[in-house]
Length: 333
Image (cartoon, rainbow, N blue to C red; front, top):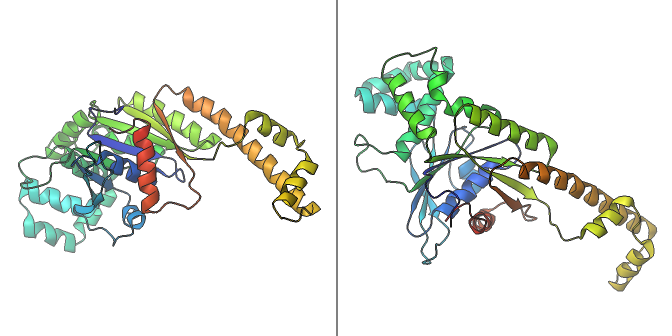
C-alpha cells in the first residue's frame, strides 16, 4: 500500500548533490504500474531526464519515455517526460488564454518573451508551475491531451522550493488582479491540497540533513504539504556495531587480518595491512556520522525512505532497482 494514495502531484526537492533527480525518476517508474500514465517533469533547464534515460534532449512538449515498474497484475504503465521551458510555456499560455498564435511567435522573435521571463522571476515561476498544474488538472483547452494518474516534478533545490511553489505570494507585488493573478491563486489550491506532496531528498551528512529540516519548517510555514524524506546514497551496513567500534578505535587484530589475506592467496605485506586498517577506521567513522544523522532524520516527524549507494552508478537498470526499493518501502503503490 502507498503512503500517498491521494497524491497526484509529487514534487521532489533536495540540496544539490543529494540525487534528487535520480529519486524523482525512480519515483516516476514506481508510480507507473498497472497501465497508469505518469508524467516526469523538469524545470531547471539541465536536460537531466534525457541524460538519465540516455535519450535525445527533450523538446518543451510531452514525450513517451519508457515503461514503468510492473504492478501486482504484472502490467507496467508508461512514463512520459516533459522538459518545461519558461519561454515555450509563455507562448503556450498566450496561445491558450489570449489566442495569440502567430502574434505570440512574433513576440518571441523580438525577444519580448525572454525579457518578460527574465525581468520578472515571479512570472517565470508562474509559467513553469502553471504547466505542471495543467498536466495534473487537465482542462478543456488542452483537447486530446493524456490524462495522467500522477505527475512527478523534479523541482528546484530545497532553498528555492517554497518561493517556486508559493507563486501567489511571489506575484503579490507584480499582479494584484488579472488572469495571471487568478491563475496563480487557482494553482495554489492544488499546491496546498492533499493532492500534492513535497518530498525532500537528503544524504546522511550534517549540511543536507540540516537543510532538509529547514526546508520542512519553511514548507509548513507556507502551508505547503510536506511529503516524505528520502535518504539517498546510503552505504552498505554489513558490519556489526561491535566490529565498527573496534575498527573506529583502531584495535582490529592485525595478525588476523594478515592471516585472512594469506588464506585468500594475497601477500599480506605491512603496507597493505596498514591501508586496510585505515580504510576500516574511515568507514567506521563515516558510519558513526551517518547513524547520528539518521537519528535526526527520524525525528523530523515525516515518513522516511532509504536508497542504497549503488557501486555501479545509476543507469536505467539502477533506476528500476531504486524504483522497486521505493515501492517496497511504501512510497508508491
